[in-house]
Length: 288
Image 1 (spheres, rainbow, N blue to C red):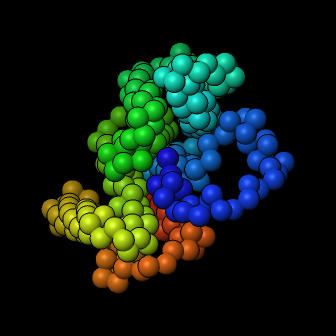
Image 2 (cartoon, rainbow, N blue to C red; image 1 turned 90 degrees about the vertical axis):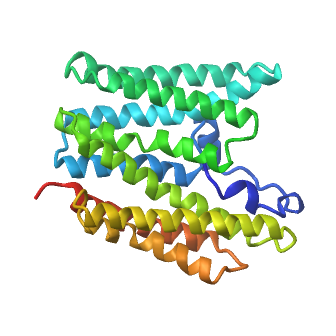
């Protein structure tokens, strides 16, 4: 789930196809997801869950491998699901899907059978449901809409409450706060990147206007909600520092929309922002 790729490669048809590198061949053979942003959306919440729980144990290791295999299975699921709808069987994709799903199940089984963490069962079912829903959206080419990307983010960031629950061995409201804040944080990138991408095309003024207003409304509502949560005492005001970088970059580009985009620079800054979010969301939710 990457909001950048489909709209930025405007001149791809004029560029000769690159010769596959060994790294690409391995990634293709293993059917690994290509979207770097999705990996961050999976692992940043996972690490946040462990840090807020202040615990790293074997249970977290099992969950890490289970969620990783389940995430990798998504690529095979998409290929198989598309082929199924088009009447074009994809036996290799189905084989990879089954293998990765079994690996995910084997790594997750001790958490249920040995550690009795039964709340993982409905969370796993919700994740599987979101995966199939995302596959159906991809078949209809709706996975890169705002609604499609937000649904995918909700599924990926489930690693935050799952890891918190697994690390502590108990469930409480902090897990829900973790999920909500991680989902809100990464949803910011959906509106921000669409603003940056749509602003490249001067001929589509209506699209530019809509992306500007959507980005403005989302981040204004986000800032207001965080301030209310902090002032009311539901969250520490440190939560504002966790979101400060993404709020700042969004309001800056709303005030001065740029007509050029540097993907490498955006990628590097988003990594830095995620680290800032990780530090301050831990300080916000972790008991002193």
